[in-house]
Image (cartoon, rainbow over all chains, first blue to last red; front, side):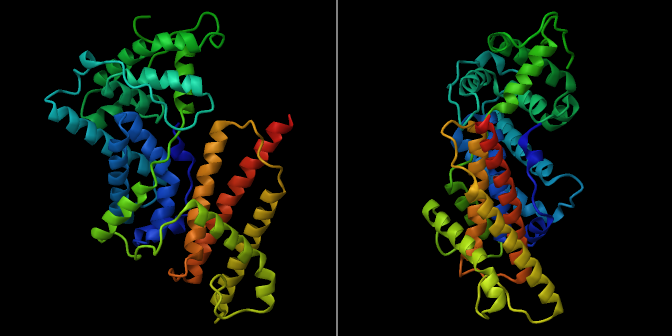
Length: 199
Length: 185
């Protein structure tokens, strides 16, 4: 699961934020800025756009936090807003180019192999970053939502306004693309006679 | 198999994806957010009088540590104008002040625990370094607000911030301790 779930904020700070206290909001920002920015950066690949999305996400948090009742964890709530903002951006980008969400595989080109941040295994992170960069935005987003954020295909379909089959087929195509890299990474990790896992 | 991954490949992919590092946005992003929030009337507090810098943050952290060190003295000889210990005016306030003092003492103890740990090893796990840096950043932000004379806080507000500081300090000490343990083996 993503790191959103690991971040705890004192409920009293959330209450203060709900009353518009800038200091409480700054604490929430500092706690969640990294996971929000990271998710936006993974989806868009463009730092300037990711920064704009971080801004939109936290402004939305400020607008809505008074309605946050605490039924779900604060991290899950913030993640949902960030994902929604990032998807909205991707949708608008596709719309501007007159394309549908399904047909962006043909324009896949080798992307920038830029690894951001600090990884405990920089070589692997660089390879995986490069492999992700080479996926179309939709597939990259679905891989991230499904395998990192733990969203189900049903949830992804609802978020993207598409069907579950669409989510599954995009993930499948992404896996095909990522498979050669896994073969390199996984030598010595995989055992004999691995079973095929459904998704 | 047509287009699925093997179970091991899938596990490996998820493992590696989850291990990808998180990144903090540039510091200017928060200032942009605050500006927009002020313009839209989403926040009440007036803008801070000066921007936070790493240098300033370190100084403020030291100031908070010093304030915590002075608590026993302040307990014996309370100063009405003190910025860190609110005046005692009634039974409720007395409870709040005690809670605040307890948090300050705990914070001081944690600072002391942190200082007593050996210096960070030369070879460190990058992920841990990033997490430590992030927690320090959050502590600096709290210290800045606790020490800014332009910000008037009630005892209740101070308690919230001190409680958060203690929580973050515990995380920091835990991480640094784990780092030391790893180096030892």
